[in-house]
Length: 500
Image: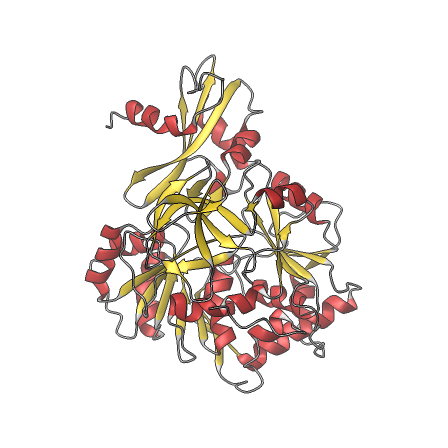
């Protein structure tokens, strides 16, 4: 069944805040601190967003201009993001962990007209900026009208770690938010009465999609822990604030269950997980501790989530899930759709409204991701006759660390200039149940100081991209043609640590 087409004309921010006029006093968002809670009603949120839109227009920006967000884990982030979209501009959210060299690459690709900056974070040089005091002052300005236009026009840009080693700017249309309606039943079981607590930071795409935009789109309430809140405090916050849904990456579930064997969460209906596969033992531990299920979703920066389990259609823990109603998903091999049970690459039809417009300024790389009308995810799987999809690994060397996809080429390129280092290779390795970390293996005349390697990485890579350990080896594994075999690094790690 095909989903209803996105209305024309359209504005993503107007869709997200469509319930504000009818329920201006309802809680849209609460930022939960240990002692204080900062609350935002729908009416106050919309005023702040449209005031920010006025401020951006008054600063001389116009529809289509790129606005780079260099903001921390605060409410400034979603307000600035929606304010830019409301005015027809294209926000570019970035991780607060990015280093100056990484930001230079970002700025080079998007040519931002303005940077909205927390002065405590690095920002590209020679770029016009508006700092927090200015940004916050804009909220009180008279509201700008929503910029209504073609739902196919660019709405926002997110960066992903490209397989070429260079981070790629993924351009999404305004219609991307319309596509997310298929997640409401296909994953969340979302209701207007829900209070969804997301464990992530404001400036993480998983948080402002699942934790903010989707609850607001249906008129529900979003709960976000204040910056610096320890994970061990989340159960008490959920209990005290009557959270009905909880969303987090698998690593958060693991840490919560390591700290608490039982969790008294009387209002919680179920949990949500995405970013990487949640193991069956960890899922069972959550069920035992809370009496509730965890429903998983699979997706990527180019298409958000489109395969999932849900309260209405639960799936075995060993599977990724089923395509959400309205999604057209297939398994491809050599460009051909495979019959049930046969392995291949998981693919999404190019007609999906949640699929990206493309990689900015990289038409050839965009087209390389397609086989005819199918977008190739790079993940291998098999689909049975009922639509249940089983994950069979990657068809490339992309890594998954803490829910972030990272290209080994990007990490290797950043570290290859380390003085004294000859060759380096990185891969992600599961060191304990549900914990994958990036490991580096290098050759040099003599072992290098680990502290020096770590400092070199810290100056060039965001925290989630940095190796957690460095292993000096006599040689890197190569095939007969001299090509690096990253999948042979795990046995080297096991040999170094006496594992089998």
